[in-house]
Length: 400
Image (cartoon, helix red, strand yellow):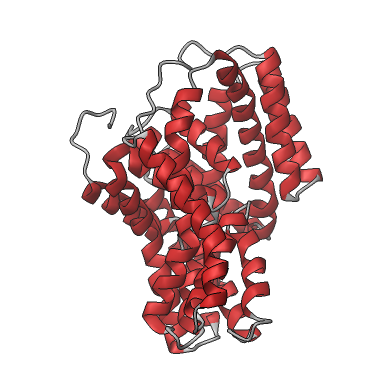
């Protein structure tokens, strides 16, 4: 239920996430910053402690963390229909754009002006910087948690592989459980899930049944459709770290098998970086580009659903059990450490890859500062700053 007292609805959730799906450039770390600004600061749909718990939980689950956080917010706001609405609103804009690209069989990504794309990426740096600052003030208020934050950031920078991030989170949780005390409001923030344990258990059972059963079905049934569903479902089930990790796994599945030529795969890989929303939406391009059967719009939809299905089943299955665990004092202490480490990981991601891949010259840095001014001082909405940043990047590109 919302903190504002308004009546929740799946339509409301869909419209809010649709706007985010049209404007959220910058990858999963930026998405989490956009979500925080929209749902914690602006709409107050959930408290910040609860939002950080969702972020921490989704960091440990396979699949796209930002999309799973979005599903959890939708579930919180409007039940199961809200979770589906959140996924659809956030994912469909980029998925539709990528299916159109596949249908046109185009490999020239210059349809998006480079200056416009650069401006959108630069604004994402400012959005993440503002979110990191706000989270650091809230979740790292003392020397022990500041130390955990810096340690996690350093470990993530020095060991950028996913294993380094997991080591940081687990170590921070162990330190927190042993030495930290939860804050006074840690036990009072609500986390309603609107899902019963029975439903959660069924979702987890279905997740495992599909993971084990699809390879068997693919080997027994004729045609390639089930085999493709198995490949995408398996990738979504076993990948940690989001879209940048799943893309190489899909390439290993699709290109050697002959389902997709390497140049077409690489075209989709590049296009996925140029659209807002989750990188997992590249599944729509790949499904459409592979051709019959089924190919086209149907193939895009099938592969998109197969890649995202594990994320949906896991977050629905995990939340009710997490609800009962989170009230234990030792778990709350561990969360204090994990939340500080999450902030540290965001600090590291702000530098690498966001800053290093985006800010190349003084005008890029100037645009970051202007975007920060617009967000933090002028209090403009992120989508307004995104639109202005894109236009500014395009204008600068014309005079370069």
